[in-house]
Amino acid sequence: MKIDFEEIKRLEKLSALSSSEEKLKSLAEDFNKIAEFVEQVKNADIEQTDIGYQRVLKIDELRADEVVPSMPQSEIVSNAPEKEDGCFVVPKVVE
Image 1 (cartoon, rainbow, N blue to C red):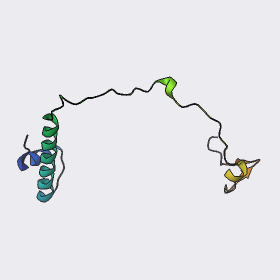
Image 2 (tube, rainbow, N blue to C red; image 1 turned 90 degrees about the vertical axis):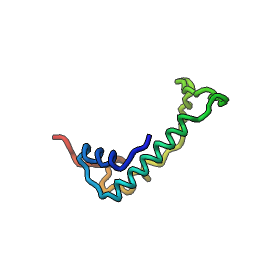
Image 3 (cartoon, helix red, strand yellow; image 1 turned 120 degrees about the horizontal axis):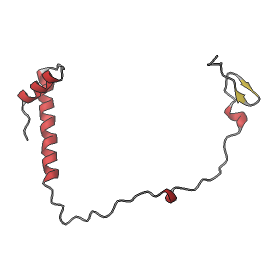
């Protein structure tokens, strides 16, 4: 599938965009490179390829929850502009 400059101009008009002719020519080249790659993929011989299997994550394969040490609360709030009883003080948002 070859995309020529005129097709790109038509798409530009349909999309209500505007670009320089140089940019449109570059875009046509890029489209053609992509189309060539798609053709290569479509024509690839995959008869001898072992596709294997797709691993499906089962709910019981999730990692186990583990308790790990956290940062000390005093260190967490140490840079807060306002704090009270080890907690952040924030302005009231809802009245």
